[in-house]
Length: 366
Image 1 (tube, rainbow, N blue to C red):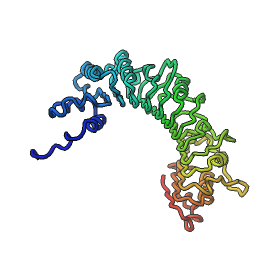
Image 2: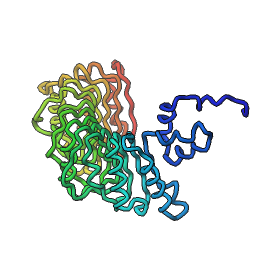
Image 3: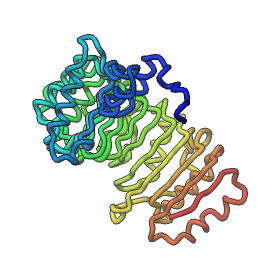
Image 4: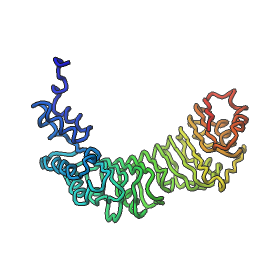
């Protein structure tokens, strides 16, 4: 082992810097003691990754702040920071004046990817929402308040992970409206429920918005959609020409005939997942009648290959599953997960007439 060849050190600087950009900055700096070859490599790493958990055990936040400032001060005026990650478990590690300066510095150095994971008591600096170069923004656990303007003309990826708090729904609308070319939107479990309508994202390809209330027509151009449905529209305002994968969390009256109407506006849909929220089961009106007069949507008859139905509880829900299996000519997989109190024998009875001659795989479970 001792006489082995150090092949890593023979790699070009640009590749070594790329490798070090995926580790915490503290680790990248530590490589400077390996040899003369490594002494100054970390200076050129186009990423800053700060995590105060590496310092909390000493009970003092000053060393963390000192390291952050040391990393910022070593930057040349034209040296880019392609990635800036900041994770703080303690609000003492990111005082407002420190946080503002660190984010300002990253933006001045043309940061493209920014990931901020901060305590809920910490407010997002307004400068984080005005960057001409930022392409990807991930937020977790902080508070968004007093938003005056948002300008993120290059942002393509916006992920609002669990714990983010918007003090007003309009601040979330302002954030979305300030990202004109956004392609990927993910909104996790926010600290409060929000209903947002005032935004337009024509370039959006993927949207996962299960924890906010948004009119489904706002996502008219997406290919992949996961959304919480407060109510099925009687007549959608648009046709979802690009939609191929849809997940619906149904928290309202589950009117299957309206869902079938919605599917008529999704001509290319291949994957459909429906989760019925059984916590509102006492108010669910799941009337559904399989009738020859009920037209079969194009996507069901010619495109749908995977269907997942979760939380089924009534015979009328079962009828809808039967409707899908009977009419989906290219169906490959059918998954049925019933509510825990539903007798599973009812599902087998429903499937008895279809399973023997079907070409698709059926999964039954609770």
